Length: 307
Image (cartoon, rainbow, N blue to C red):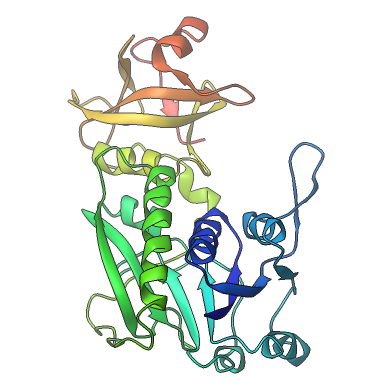
């Protein structure tokens, strides 16, 4: 099948690789403009651009798709479908109407739950037992289109946003190939019940509020790994908490260290305590609690603040 692909990050790159491996002809890859990255802040191509360039696929990087001239660039490909995965730009209906089979979106949630930008993090934060991928026929609304295919995936107790992302990327890559083999398929309208929205992650959300129950804060450490990292402050210095688990509390004020040893640093929460097992000081590396304590003595009674 002749296709145009639109995507930017690693999640999308895995799908593009699978589509190419399945023998489809991708004639154009849309991806966001190169962004400054690294210490030198040099422009860096997106993962999708790197895959496309290696495969000899033309790359188109418009800053917006509101310009009709960009529509004509896509129309010229005469593609049968437009495959979209975490592209990052709004696709006007005029663009979705160009291919015969329209736009097909690879979305990392079980729609209608978690429409929007950050479904993986929001699912972990909410304590969802499962996630999954939906292949959706795109329309003008935010992730409102009918679903052609879906697959479920349990969320493991130790899944981070990073590990769940990788599982869902692999699942999405398989699912889009299956969907393409079955077009036009039989799209099923989304239910009007159970709609939730996965708002974009704001760095301010990463601040640990010790007044919350430990179970919620444990989910926060996983949802914000690898970015932006759950953060608190110790002696006025920021500390990121990468791994933690719920432990018994003793009623101490939230933020108070109730125990510290090789197994971790136990901090009182609104309910129970949070045992911090992997931490990182500003400018340092992620390290176990035992290593952290060897260079940063923390004793019971010390207080972690929000920032």
